[in-house]
Length: 241
Image (cartoon, rainbow, N blue to C red):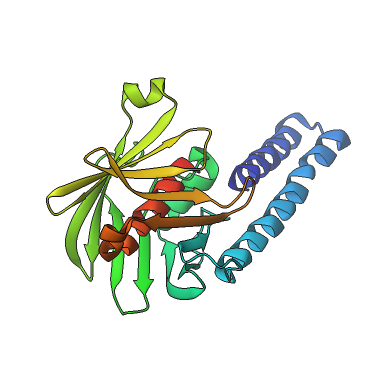
């Protein structure tokens, strides 16, 4: 949507300058230019529909797994976090500056840049995944995790050549003295979380072309399952699983 808006503005300026300096005007060009506002309107309706689905999401399945709905990924609209059918909290993406949102919409395209997530759980805890971008025109690689303003861990993307060769996406979650590894095949919506090469949690999209995501850890890791789920959400934002 942002790109269409930028193209419409650039095209309008070009037409005005062409008329002022060359005295030329073509109706066909104007009609072609008017297709951009029509496209923007359609995308805006889709965008609004996705945001409403995210914010009004209610699970309709019996499984006692963590789940959420991620249809729209650019805005700071509210999304809901559940375990089974019980609401566990809310979360949203946020930007530190207004122009960062515009940059993602117009230039970057995939929405990976300036990625920050804020979670508010029902028990009162507040978790923040804050990007640590050091260079303005470089995609995120590291996030610090804060629980109620206290730093408790880090997340790092794994863009290794080994992953590229395997068409695999990876991410490291560092908590205390443990490092958890999230991995997923590029063409697959399933994600595994490993600790010392042992799978301790799994996440997946409910079905192709759907935006419901489910996540569950093995019994011995239930104590940190909420945090593992939050990192799974970040993983999906980054890699568009």
